[in-house]
Length: 180
Image (cartoon, rainbow, N blue to C red):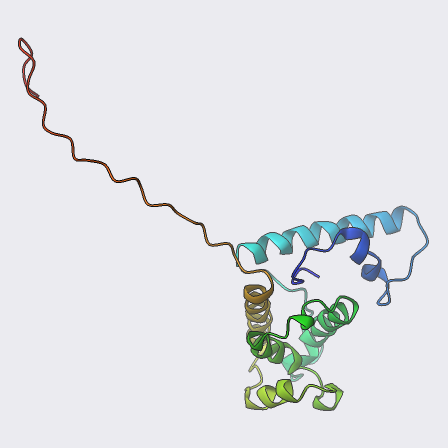
């Protein structure tokens, strides 16, 4: 949701926090607290992405030391993919610069789960899977920043050149005043 070309108001995405299909949940203090926590995390991530700063994706370490890193990051990537399904404006951009970062994310899926994604699958085949969880997490953050460069490019400040000034002539000393 944070990488959509246009920001989404919380009313559009908060329902997806507690239900992958965005269905309403019973109101109450628990739901209010969940939404407040989600909004706070959303704001943290929004600031980090806008400033192109590191953020910590919430991934759980594997239960088994020998498990591939994909086992830990797949829930995060699945949530990302679910958000793209619910809010497809990002994928509608059809920008070739999105292929590499999406491939970095989607390489964690089973290749057979990638329907109608031939260009993406071709790039995924060229990628080396992450060696460990730290590298997998680094790839998640890198992919998010690369996507943000396309969907939410940072504004380049327009600086105006300083107006040209005529060099000032040296002043003559005033009578009765010493020169400095």
